[in-house]
Length: 307
Image (tube, rainbow, N blue to C red; front, side, top):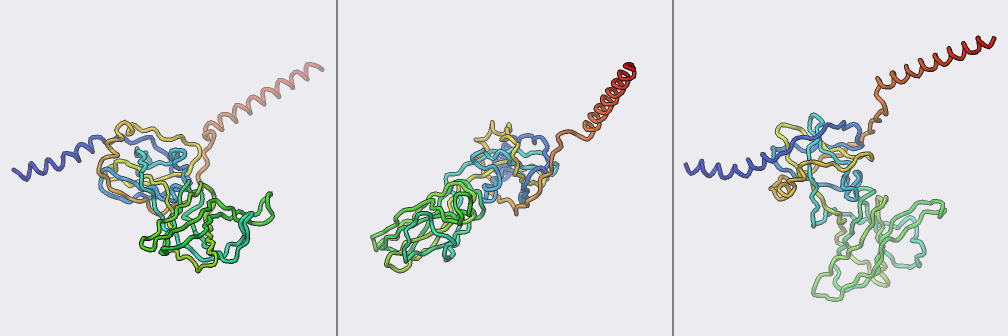
């Protein structure tokens, strides 16, 4: 008896959650989206889908409320979701690669003892973010610059480094570790950054870690039973979805959820949508031909009557 009561208590929250599952939305053709990804299978229930760097870069992103992002089931029906903005950033480790930059910063004063590092980003077109740099040194002071490489254009015949952040980084307490240096990076089309450190007359400052701090989002939704799900995005003609699920978004945002990450991104060539259907095309063409023939007959008769 006690076991039955305990089971009923444990299943009550789950039953309440499934009672709130919304109806599926209107169908959409995934071929009209530039990017498609598979969502890992799992049990029905609340799911928190992590928005990774590729999704941030290739969708219309947080600045447009992810207007082009859709979750589709096996029948191409939309699975409603709500967007969760998290306070903790999405952290991506970057590997600093020692390398001389291919160009000099615009207007920079040449110095003899600079250390330069190439930082490969997960993708171009990422939203505004931050770069956090760590060192094991305890007593130091260095000038630090972060730049992006700009190709030759009508403003300059040669490629150039454009400095996007510059500051002085220092620490003078040998008993405590230095705080990480955080530099802001605006949204842009660069796929790599160049980190330069003015060493002065000192030895090279040891860099122990470089991390990219991106805005963090998750998509919360209820996984339908017995259905494979896919994630699609990459369209410029959609408005942000309006689902009835938003009416109970607080319940979904506070519910315990299984966190998943979408699988590999597949870039597809979106199918072009016809402005008119084939039936409409032939109807319009037939009307145009009939109208043209009628006009020719009328003009012929008028010309015959003149003679």
